[in-house]
Image (tube, rainbow, N blue to C red; front, side, top):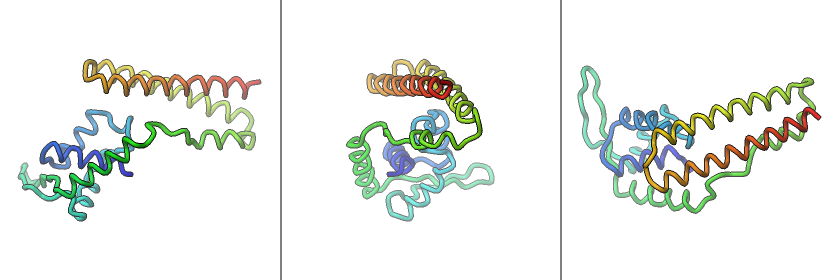
Length: 174
């Protein structure tokens, strides 16, 4: 399933929008931290959704020398959005699949100390993500109990990953 597809259809379901506005919402919400949505993928998704009849050009706006297309969701787009929501809500929120586990199997193939250094770098990056999550939670305080539940879950996953990396680091050192 495409996160970008669901996001764009969901935002269009709220009302007609142009690609730049959707990109601004993706950036402002730091959605790339939570989903596979990248700001650059929005325009491609809009074109594809329009070609599939899930979105349509609602209007065009002139801003200076540029002509912006404003898109709206179609009835078929709404049906597709509901199908995407059903699939997403029926799936587990996080996956236990990871190439990390597979890489640990052959870590000894790397140069001496390289695996330890890589795990340490991963730990630092994880701590930075925890700090960003905490800042995001503070900035979005009071959103809703659902948002709080998502933040709690993300914090628990990050804490579990920190512990795993500490354990792996200890085992690599020993």
